[in-house]
Length: 354
Image (tube, rainbow, N blue to C red; front, top):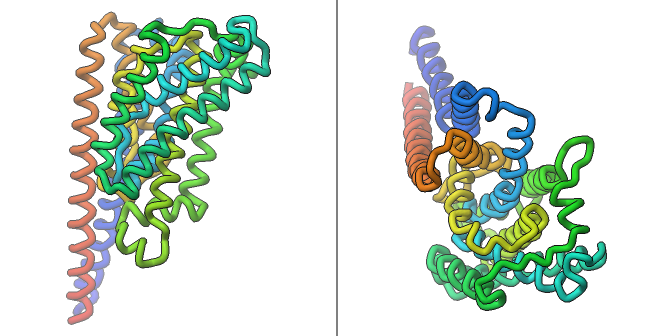
């Protein structure tokens, strides 16, 4: 092989690596899409969309979705799915509100808020544990299990409240976490940031994160390597449930009510955000940082539509379209990555023969 041919092979390999990085990096594309959306709405409604007040509202709106998205990221990386997060959020909020109501309701103090917090987390852990056990040990597909939980958790929440929202939320909760801030940054945003950072560290630098990716890449291979796959899957679904419970508590803090009918599309929105952020629905690939960026796509869409006066029905259509596009790009990235890897192997093989 001549020097020119060798240089050509190396150049082809370099171009292939660059192409795989650009095509395979969901974070790059989703960040670019987010910038375009923000610029578009800023041009269409500069005095409203780009205002400090609206930006703060946008961050608060995205906070609860981001908390749910961190848990969903771990689930989807294992090649699973959780359609129940919105209903678990509602159920946990109802349980928390009922507990705080018995301890004084609107006039309850900080002690009731703490108990309500743990009640919400416990409610989420309960449903997450049920989902995990059925997926891991009963071998029922995650889609079916969490679809059942989606209806069951919401149904139990309505039974507990007779379908009427609870409004006896302590002012100690709404006045601090709900509308309070630190140096102008709302508590809801701070909590979401903390959850995101902890989730990113957990996924990137711990054995728990490595096992999560390994199971999503090859569950049987992980089992043969000594990983307790079933037990780990239960932990992952419990984590998602706990964060849905936290989302229910934060929703109570923000809206001062259980908002039973206000979370019907949360699962669709969160799944869209996670997949848009680069997490593969086929498992094994994903990042919490990508999810953090992806969450803002549906959040910006909804916020921009409200400002422009677009009917709520179109908001739901837009979120659905975003989900389909997310899956399409996910599959495109996988195909491109596979083709790139195959081309690289052929080039190395040809180089070795020569």
